[in-house]
Amino acid sequence: MEFEISSSTYYIYGICIALASFRGAQVVMHAFRSRKSESDKSGWNTKEIKKIHAIPSAPWVPLLGSVPFLGRHPCRTISKWGEEKKLGNIFRVKFGRLDAVILNDFDAIHQCFVRHSHLVAGRQQNPLVVELWKGNGLLFLDYGDKWKSQSVFCHSSFRKVLGNGKIQEIAIAESKVMAKALHMQLSNQFTSESNIYGNHRKTNLNCNQNNCPCVAASYHSRDQLDDEWTCLNPLQILNQALANVVCRVLFGRNFKPDETEYCDVVAETPIQARKSFEAFMAAYLIPVLRRIPPFRGIINEALELRYATFKMIREIVDERADESAHDGGRPEFIDMYLDKITQEQSLHGDSTFTVEQLHATLFDIFTAGSETSSSTLMWALLYLARDDDLHGQIRDEITNALAHTGGEVTEELIPYLNLTRAVLHETVRIRPILALGVPHTVTKDCDIAGYRFSAGTVVMPNVWSVHHNEKQFPEPDVFDPKRHLNENGKFTNSKYVVGFSIGTRKCLGRKVAEVGMLYHLVALVRDFEFRLPRVWSDTKKRYETMKIDLSGIEGQILLPPTYCLEWKVIPPPDQ
Image (cartoon, rainbow, N blue to C red; front, side, top):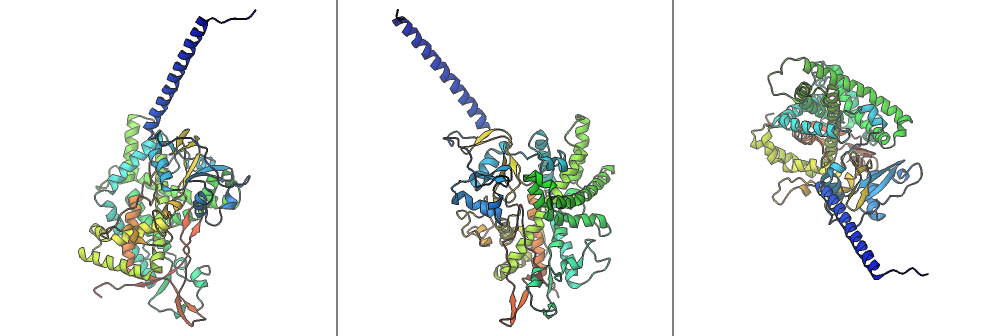
C-alpha cells in the first residue's frame, strides 16, 4: 500500500520550512551584528574584508625554518620576499620552530599596531623572558591590566618630568660634559681630577688597536698624520654621555667620577646590551638556544652585568625611598613611582605598583634608551664624516642658529636647526637600530586585513622594509636628509619613519632620545672637526680618504661598523 501525503500535509511542511528558514536567518544576522559590534569596538571595518585567507608562508625547511635563506642581512632579505615571492605585505617566516608573522609595509604595521592595537599588543612569555623579568618591567610585560596601568602611569609621569624644557636643560648640560671629556681625550689631558666620567680607558678609544679597521687599512705610520688631528672612536664617550641623560631623567642625577662602580655600570651597560642583544633575541625567538653555546655563554655574561645594573638601581631606589622629603626640586620619575607605590598600598594593599616592578621598569628604560641613542648618533657621525658638503651645511646652520641666541646653546635653538634635525631623522630611517622591531603577540583570535590571526601568534614589524620603500622614499639607499624638509626648508616628521614604533606599545623614551641626540650632535659639530681617516695609497703615492662600508653589522639589531674618525678641536671664537 502506497503512503500518500495529502495537500494539507504539504502545506504544513511548507510553513515549517519557511519558519525554520526565517529563524535561521535571524540567528545568522544576530551573529553577524554581534561580531560587527565587537569588531567596530576594535576598529575592524567589515567593508575592507571580503574574504578571510590563511597567511602565506616564506620558504622554510624542517627544524631550521627560514633561517638558512635569510643571508647576512635578514631584514633586507625578508623585505624583498613580499614582492619577489608574491607573498604580499603580511606573511609568515619560521625562525626555527617559531612561526612569526611579518608586517612588511607601513599599511600592515598601521593596521595591526594602531587600528587593532589591543589585539596585537602582547609579548611572548617564553622561558627566557620569565627567567629574566619574572612578570615585571615594561618592555617584555605581556598585555593586560598590569601593563595598562603601568603604561598609563609611566607615560603620564614622563610628560610631567620632561615638561617645561626640563629634557632640553638636561641634554644641554650633559652635552657640555661630553664635549669637555672629548676635548681632554684629544688633548691628552688626563689626571684624576679631569677624569670626568670616572672610567675613561684611553686605549679603548684611540685608534691603536690591532682590530681597528682603519689601522688595517692604513699603509703608513700613524706618526705621519697631521699633528692637529687625532684618530679616535667616540662610541664609548657617546655611550656614557647619552646614558647620563637617561640617568638624569630616571634618577634625577648622573654619577660623579669617584662613584667608580656606578660609572662602570653606566659605561658598560650599552656596550653589553649591544653585544648580548643579538644572542638574547635569537634565544627569545628560539628558546632552545638559551642552553646552546655560544648563546649560553653570551647570555650568562650579560646576566652578570644585569645583576650589577639591578644592584645599582636597587641602591638608588633605597636611597631615594629613605629620604623623608625630596630635595626641594620637582620630583623625578623615580620619586613619582615611589609615591605611587605608597598611595596604592594605602588604598588597595595588593597592587601592581611594587618596588620589584619599579626596579625592572628602570632597567628596561635605562638599557634600551642608552644603547639605541648612542648607536644612532654614531651612525649620524659616520654619514656626516663621509659627506663633506652636508657636514659643512650642518656646521653653517648651527653657527647661524647660535647667532640668534647670543652664542648660547638653549631651547630656542631648535626652530633654527631644521637640517640638523633632518639628519637625525634620516639616520633613524636609513639605519634603524631595531630593523625588525620588538616582537608583539596576538592577544586573542581575530581577523585583520583579510587574514586570520590566532591568539599567541608572534608578529614582527619589518621596520627596514618600511624605511626603504621606494614609493615613500625615492632612492631609499641614499642618505638624503633634505627629503624631510618642506618647500620652506622646515623640518617635518615623516609618519613613515617608525623606528620608535607606533601604536599602543610605542617607545616611551622617544623624546628623551631625540632631544639628547640633537644637543649632543650640536656640541660635536660646534666644538670639533671630524672626518674619515686618511690612508696612504702605495699606487698613487698620496693620502686618500678611507672608503668605509656602511651596510652595518646586522642581526636582530643593526649596529654601526667599528670605525675611528679623525678629530680636531675647533678653537673658541674669542681665540
